[in-house]
Image 1: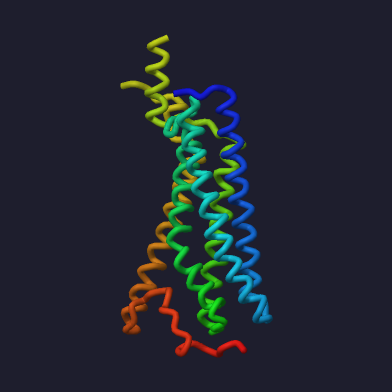
Image 2: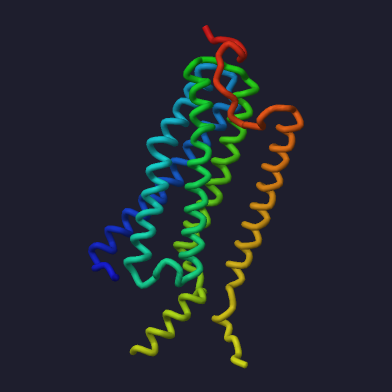
Length: 173
Length: 62
């Protein structure tokens, strides 16, 4: 299944914008997490945690799934395939892992936002949640830089499946 | 025996990423097991998200 040139470029544009947008939104989330941790101003801390939940729910999660979906379409609709090249497979594994961790941490993000919304500020609870969120945001940002680098450099290396497919194609032609 | 060419080997960068991923998984696993054991030792569920209860928590903001 190979896409036409127009569809391929549209899918590529959607994939690049969603992936880069995801990196940017996680960077914004990290900035808010650091502000929530370091600020001494109560309204700033409350606003930071409320904004973090909104960003996570309405920007980061949709962009993570958009990036995953458009990446799947992009790889399955082009000769790159999904498991033929190591760099494509590694990108898939990292993105799925990051999306899973994000979904697992949504409860914690919601908890921190609830504390802020109720204006119930236990510094130790919020601090513990804030440290976890900042660490995960920083880790997620670093993790998602790897697929970005792989997409640009496309390091060589066929998987066993890719080599078998290549031999099959050579035998046919 | 068929000789393995350079393209048949797993690339070095894949092995490097694999080793880093394994080390991270090991670290996270040890961290989670440690938290779980600590939670049991303290008699609590070891849950990182305690129930939200305004009366049990610190100060109410005016």
